[in-house]
Length: 342
Image 1 (cartoon, helix red, strand yellow):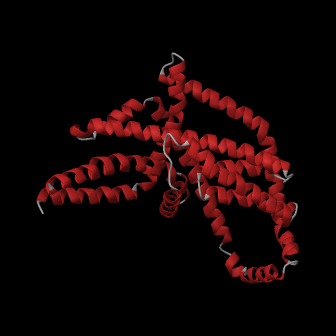
Image 2: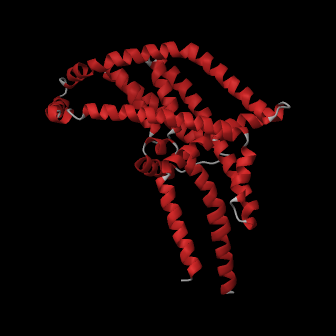
Image 3: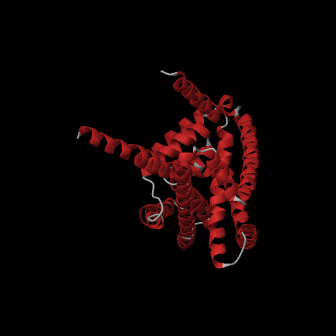
């Protein structure tokens, strides 16, 4: 092994260790890139329709988002807050309601006794420390979100300068290819964000209408949770179903819970197998196994931020693997191998 090869391998190891130590910073940066792409899609549309500069289009977009957000908040926030208050009042009644339900079924009654027997004082003592840790994590996440928003606005304000900075760090012979890769990654990520946003809106309206028709309490809050968790496919919709099912079970009846389960099952399958593939057919569509493994791996390595940003990262990596690994490396390798055989 030559000295240059050894030095290059050592440099890659050092860069890998440095990237791992800075993984949270890099995750914040990638989150800002995702949000900047989400801001850039309307900016591009506005500049096509109106003679606006990029800063003016960005300001107009932020103003429109602020006005729409204020209107939606004024319309929906009072009812959402009221339903959150109802849910908070319901939580203390949860043990008594579960006791009433489990007393009717012997198997569930024995399970309740086992759970209550295991909930000793020694096991409940660390609860205070866990709550403090949760509060600290929430404050840290808030700071990270604000930093992501600030970086996203700066990136959306002048993306060409940041793109030139990245191209300057690329070898001269590969700069044209790198520019093409950046353009394709941006297009795929923008298409994925647009498709998932439309899917979340449809899920919100359909869930709200369906739960309201079934006369399930807290329909608006449950539909909002279902819509937000649409951005975490495979895991998110399944977890979102638990809230309306629990509300229906505790406030109405087990039969109503089954009706909610059927409704969410129909909506979830329609979103996963019809709506999302149609919306993403021209951009990028991830295999469910790839999406689930990415969420599990990044969730285990990076926690909740990694879980939330797993799919945008996989969208970008899928484009890079398709263009670089398959097209530039594997296809050329196959061609040269066939030439050698002849």
